[in-house]
Length: 89
Image 1 (cartoon, helix red, strand yellow):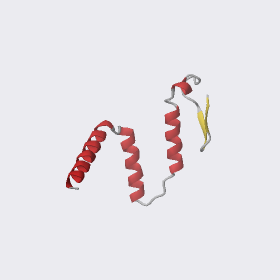
Image 2 (cartoon, rainbow, N blue to C red):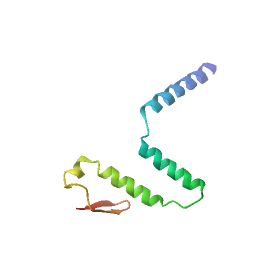
Image 3 (cartoon, rainbow, N blue to C red):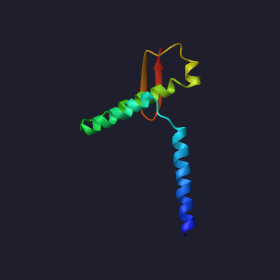
Image 4 (cartoon, rainbow, N blue to C red):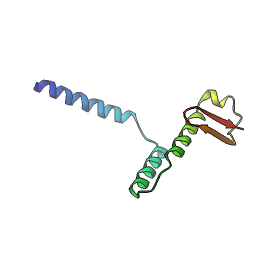
């Protein structure tokens, strides 16, 4: 039983420290997380749907298949939650 517990602790530490070195947050992610935490501490309402829409738009504009149909950045984006993202050029 003791060997089993030691093995579990060693494996968990290897996985924890191994994965933490692979995943790094950039300045944008750090800023968004910091903003959400500060607004939560101040007890103000955060429009999470707006944050999610902006993140979806950012991810969609990085896709190669989307970029080949757009000529530059879109003027407007229309997001229907759980359905579709439309870009108006």
